[in-house]
Image (tube, rainbow, N blue to C red):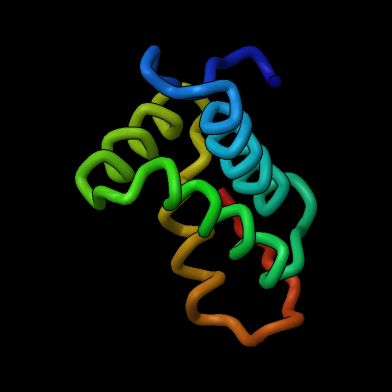
Length: 92
């Protein structure tokens, strides 16, 4: 963790917290180095199993962006627009 906090909710289980934190660390990875598209999508699907609501997803991603300057939406969009096996690298 690079001096900021991940957006979490008190009512989540430990397993759910791990899924959400893992997703946000993969967003970081897409900015700081790169990540394979399929790997990222696995973490995104796990995140969506905890946060199925698009409104809550936007809220959490906005909180993460305000804390870290990483925009999760850009990484998700890049992943959805890329082909399986491609490496994702997002610039700030």
